[in-house]
Image (cartoon, rainbow, N blue to C red; front, side, top):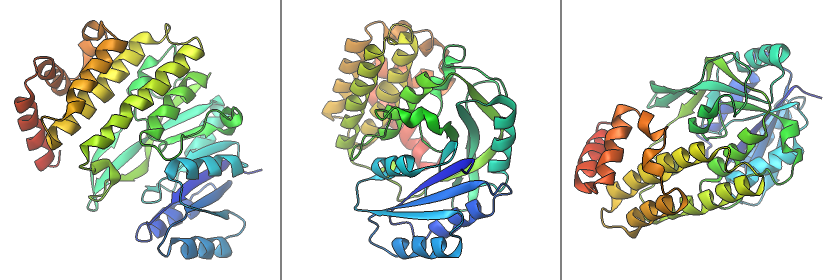
Length: 328
């Protein structure tokens, strides 16, 4: 049984897939299996995946399935995985060669359920930033001791999950929806008894100009409310809502009242969702404005929060539009 199962959903990435796969094959720790889940890709990706498996059958398995979206592809990988730990890698991203070795060392020392490691953000061949958790590195903890894990990246990458966490079949990515990452990530966090944030930065996240994350369709942001309905219902059903109410409130402020509202404002300042986002947060968390985490927002986010509270949408559009044009 391999130590690691690396799951790579593959769809229309023939330009990027070779770098992703080769970065995994070049790992200094070779105790892994690579599951390439071809999600019905219409380009050369299925053939590329088969060629890699033929070159390295000891490490690489290919799963072909009709197109069902990245969430369903990751779920298929989870169900097929045999390793002790699962590492998700997007097919247009890549890993530093020491990633699995550093994870193996950390696992031997701490045996945690979840490991976070940093990511470089790259665009046009250069590093433009880093993604790191706002928690002390190297400490074994859980969500109760380190609730700021709520406010880290909700993407599946940059983490290693103990596969046993997924023995609960309800802990899967919902297929064919947007915001599937946050729906599952905040549930898995609550199930982890031991979490460790590593010091190193090993993941390389490619910010593509054609990425779905840069979509200009305002209506798609509406699905974020459905995602939060799912999250809040799960925390209530599992008796965790009251314990983590402050953190869930701050999560809603960050993702709905700030990030999603700004995204929609930049597309259409008169869109109905702007009001719906505010109403949702007010209904679920009437005291959100006095939330202790909101009081600790970084300067730029705090300014945006105050402007949105005063409905100064034109100023918000001006500030964030300038930021977007400058690529910051």
